[in-house]
Image (cartoon, rainbow, N blue to C red; front, side):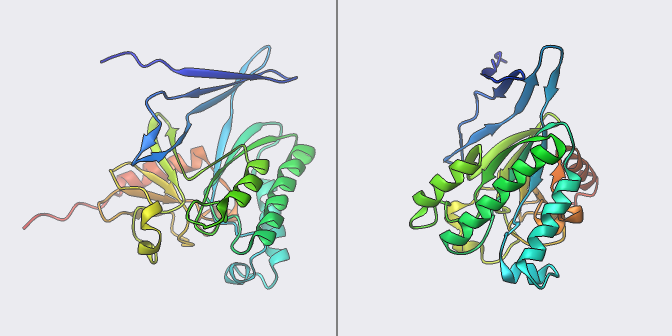
Length: 265
């Protein structure tokens, strides 16, 4: 077995040095360009701090129908509830990274731009209220106008890039030393998959963290028996982002309950 070297990049700021480590073996998965999500460390003069990751999908800020389905008679009340739940959940005096797994909104570009301003304001408020600096990584969903499935996605993509630290459709993530996939869509088991088949991952047996389904169930199994972990708003306790530790716990529990494969006749 050969030795795998890690690629390190570093960025200076007033407080210290931010080092990102990426896996040089990554780059293409199922023919799709990926941005690698491995480890981020913030190095100060006296310590090395690993950035803590959080995951959420499908907030649909400002969307009237989704707000009603979640029990709110007004999108403003829905959005303020998510705002306060997220503010309460996320830690103080930390540097964290939020993975947004798609569907920030659902609708035309002007409303989406309003949703982008909302999440950008939340990030600023988190810093001012709790002294927590939050990086934001976007994995686009089918209702995001920046997604490549949209005809005129470039304008929206520029807007996303102004708000998020990275914008992509798929990533590979190291969770407790095991690689999992991050993607808006599950491998299988959701509604009308044929409409988005061209933009989905092939199921090659790697655990998938996803959104899209609007189900309250965190765990499902693909048609091929691969574990799928749903981090959509409805599946997250308190409608708030789940930490990497919480996701790892869900995966560990699900792995103990994995259904047996049907026996061949």
